[in-house]
Amino acid sequence: MRGSAGFLLCSLLLLAPRCTEVAAQDIQPDPKTPCANWMGGAPGYPGHNGLPGRDGKDGKDGAKGEKGEEGLQGPKGDQGEIGAPGQEGPRGFPGYPGQKGEKGEGAFVYRSAFSVGLKERAPHPNVPIRFSKIFYNEQSHYDASTGKFLCSIPGTYYFAYHLTVYLTDVKVSLYKKDKAVIFTYDQFQTNNVDQASGSVLLHLSSGDEVWLQVYGEGDNNGVYADNINDSTFMGFLLYPDPEVH
Image 1 (spheres, rainbow, N blue to C red):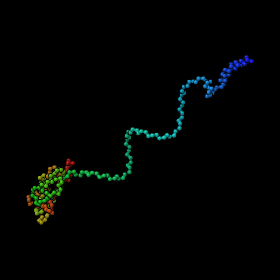
Image 2: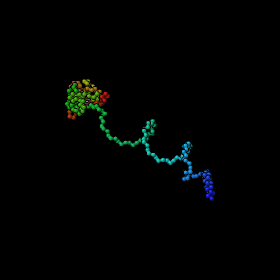
Image 3: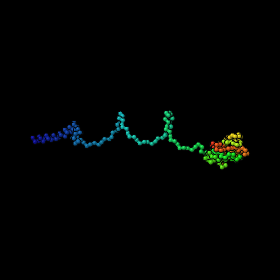
Image 4: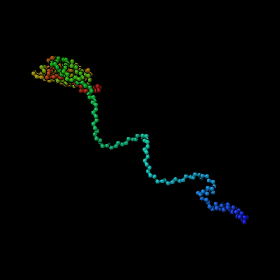
């Protein structure tokens, strides 16, 4: 009996490895089970990277994203070509009046004028008549002590005289540089007061003198003046010569 049992045990031990090999071929253990770790072999090495796959089809556009923050201003570009003029716009309303400007200089910067009258009657002949009653002589271009006007501004002048005639005839001349320019004669009418007058335009150079005097002998000096009758002489610059400006 003891011998039979030993023989049976040995037979079982010899058959166990073969059964185990057959069972291992028929039934593979689940690699996910804990037994797979002690029953499997050593881990293998990682394989090589595979080739890239083909490009996939374009996907659909996604939803529009939120607006980003404004970037920094770039440098100024080159100036473009001038475009064609546009159509004229509607006319605007008148603006408000501006402030009053400062007073400017007059158009005639150069001034020369005088107006004088006679104080004494019967002036002496052949000498300048001294009109000593001054109406206007702001520039002092007329000399009352000599009766002569002295030109200080070259240009064109206007001269005129209006004389009261009384007691005798009057013959007067307007002189320029010792030369008579115009003559005026008035014949006195008895018991009457008459008037003699004349006027002229003259071009004067600087330093020229102009005056009025009785012409001829003493019987032609009926120029008269009193408190109600005047004899006057006047002149003024119309415009200066261009080179004076």
